[in-house]
Structures are given as C-alpha cells and as structure tokens.
Image 1: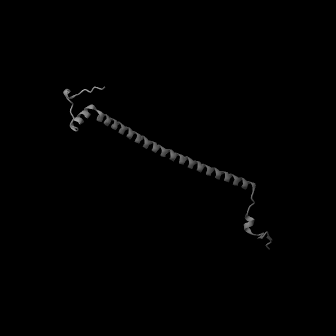
Image 2: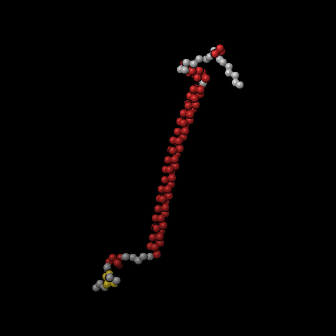
Image 3: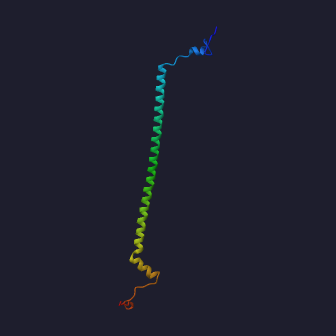
Length: 117
C-alpha cells in the first residue's frame, strides 16, 4: 500500500535513493566555485598578458620601420648636400656661365670704375 506524502508516493524509488544535502556538499560546492573563479581569473590574466605582448611586438616593428626610414632620409640628405655643394662650386658656375650663357671674363680695358658721390 502506497501512502502519499507531499504529492509523492512514499515508496517512490527516485526519492528513496536521494541522499541528504550535507555540510560536506556545501563545502565542496564552495571549493569548486572558488576554483572556477581562480581558473577564470587566470585565463583573463593570460589574455591580458598576451594582448600586451602582441602590442609590444607591433610597436617594435613600427619603431624598426621608422628607424629604417630615418636612415634612408639621412642618406638622401647627405646626397642632396653633396649635390648642393657641387652646384655652388665656383668652377662649375664659371663653366656654366661661359658655355650656356655665353659669358666671358672681361678684359681689364672693359672694366670701368664707378665713383659714388
């Protein structure tokens, strides 16, 4: 004969096999929750560390590219300064004036002195 208690028959095997929730179960649940929180925290720390390392490597590549650009610009500056010195040389200017502009060094008779008042 099955008696009914709280809507369940007393002889129900699912109910009779359940064990009571004990203090040990509560302690085990607390430990598992803390362990899970620790694992999540460790994973977040790893993600932050990895992200920062990726950013550092990226900045390193940017710095290296800028240094290479600086070297190239310094080389170009040296080349342009050399070219400027060559263009300003008196020998080159004299040759340019005589060949391209048909100028000549004046003879002493052609030089006139100007007297200011």
